[in-house]
Length: 79
Ligand SMILES: [Zn+2]
Image 1 (cartoon, rainbow, N blue to C red):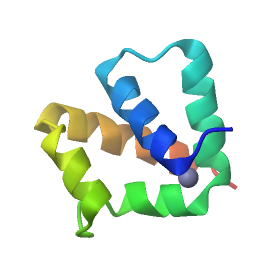
Image 2 (cartoon, helix red, strand yellow):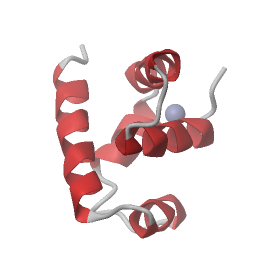
Image 3 (cartoon, rainbow, N blue to C red):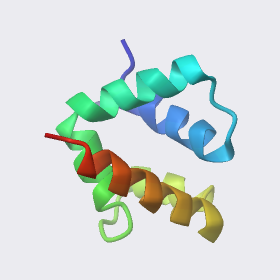
């Protein structure tokens, strides 16, 4: 099982385009079942915190835009 921390790492790889289809599936599965992760990602820009800061350091604007796009599709397809 992937932890939330693993998921963030997967997400960064995903945004870099370096995630295997298998891991992408794991990422989607975790995000579809983990409300805290979804909430975190949805509000990562607005909410200060360690994870957010760690993400922001590695997140150029282009990546941030990609993440927003990914989250919109993710949230839209959630029940
Ligand atoms: Zn999680």
